[in-house]
Each structure stands twice: as C-alpha cells, then as structure tokens.
Image (cartoon, rainbow, N blue to C red; front, side, top):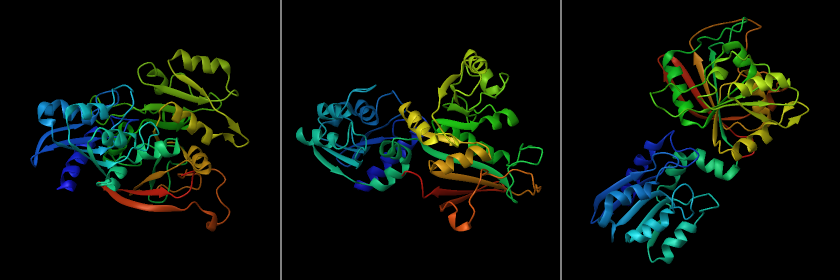
Length: 366
C-alpha cells in the first residue's frame, strides 16, 4: 500500500507542471485508518507547499495519521514557513517520503527534525520516479546551472531552412503546439540574434490561456536585433533579457532598455561568449531550465560549451535540398566521425506525421 499512496502523491505533484519553477513539483496524501483524508500539491512558486495544502484540508483528522509526500519537507523560511514545523504541530504520527531534498538548505534536515519530534519517518519510496519527474530540480540543485533542452526542427533531408533562410513552417501545427507546451514548462526560452532578425518570433507560450510565460533570452553579442522586433515590442509586458557584450553599440543597447528589455553583459572567450559562465549567471537568477530554439551557430556554441542536456529533434516529411540550406548545428564541426558528440537515445514520438526523436547528451559538466 505504501507505493499506492505514493503513486497518488506523484500524480498530484504533476499538477504543478510548468508552474512551480524553480521549486520542485510536490504532492502529499494524508492517510488515516487506510483511508485518504486529504490531498495537496504545490500549485505555484510562492504559494503554500503540498504538505501545508493537505494539512489545511485534513484539519483535526491529521492527528495520528500518516503523510505520504514526494519530497522531504522543508525546514527553512523562504516565501512560505517550514513545512516540517506544520507537520509536527498537526499531530501527524508518521511521514513517508519519496526523495530526500538535494537542496543544501534542506538535505536530510527535514528528516532529522521530524524524527527529533518523535515522528516515524521512512524515505526512498518511489524515489527514482520522483527524481525523474523532478529531473530539472535535481539537476539544478546538483549542477547549479540550468537544465538545457535544445529543440530543432528539420526536413527529412536534414535542413532547418531553405537557401533563402525561409523556415516557416517545417513542422506541422501539432509539433508547434508541443513546443508551446515546452515553453511554459521551462523557465526560459533562448535564441540568437540571427533567429530574431530572420524570423521575428514572439517567443511566448501560447499553449493555453493564462499559462506561465518563459523569460525570453536573446543572445546578441553585437546589439544587432532591430528595435521593431516583436520581442522588443512586447518587452514591457513579457520578461526579455538581452545577452550582449561591450562590443555592442551603446545607442543600440540604450534602445533595447528603452523598450523594457534587461541587459546582461556576458564574459567573453576567444571564440565568443563564455556560455559556461553565462549559465552560472542565469542560475544565480533562478533560471533553472532553458528551451533553446536557436539557429545552427547558437546550437553549435552551446554544444561546444558542453552545457546541453537534452535534444528534441523534430523531423518533418519534407525534402528541401540545397547545398546552402541550413542544418541544425553549424560552426566548425569535427574532422572525424570518431570525434562526434555522443548522444543517448531516449524516445520517439509522433505528431500527425512529424517525428520527434529525443536524445540526452552524455558530455557536459554533469
């Protein structure tokens, strides 16, 4: 029965998908006399945690009950009070935990506090499932950099745009709808200046009305994007960050700021922007995940920096052809096949004829 109740807690946790970043998705179930008396989940960052939501529903029925919670209860004061204190005060007799919290603020301190209060504690129930559900959170806590998902769409012959740089639309509406879901699940979406100049994308999530919007990050080392770009026209209402350098004209940068965009000056290397340092900077801003929808040059730079974690590669049933047509990854490339970046196959999904192959990267600083 322990697993069944924890499965229920995991299903509750999933309701927070795309709403809790940079917090984890957490579910809680309170059981007394083999009956579920209350449920709760973490609905959004800044709102009460799953344990408190469940306790508020259980009220006096929590006394002497068992709580099943997918992640170790917190012990620190953040935007909400410590959950461990609320559990102790409720009279809960036993707590079953899916995973211990990797955050240094919590890491087994919650377990210790509950035990010291005389509460029976069990950990590790469906731990692997919870860590998979919250892979972004666990990665962010361990690596202190965002979980990077690279998305690229190409024709069956490997082209991401025609020789005239036309790329609308390679994939179908179903594929694009899934991409909008990804935008609302992840904290930010990133493109390069060339993508903004060529496609003038809005980069918002239009999955459903009222869905959470990602921070829009444009890598523009030389301050080249036009002031009339859609991302700048909407910068006052949607968070828009321009990653640039001191090489960019001051007048252009002032124009970006006048539109409401925020400037982030990146460290540079001989090859351009230091993306490893940039990711640490973004992590400090609580950006726990990024969907990269860049062109071939940005993709190449991020892969070379070793910061990409996952690839969603869409393949459309079309032939574009052309020696000058673009491919998903540009740059210098490797001289020998033996030196190619090694990927791990994850899954294949289909979207009304389009195919999406998902791979995980083996390299990087993981």
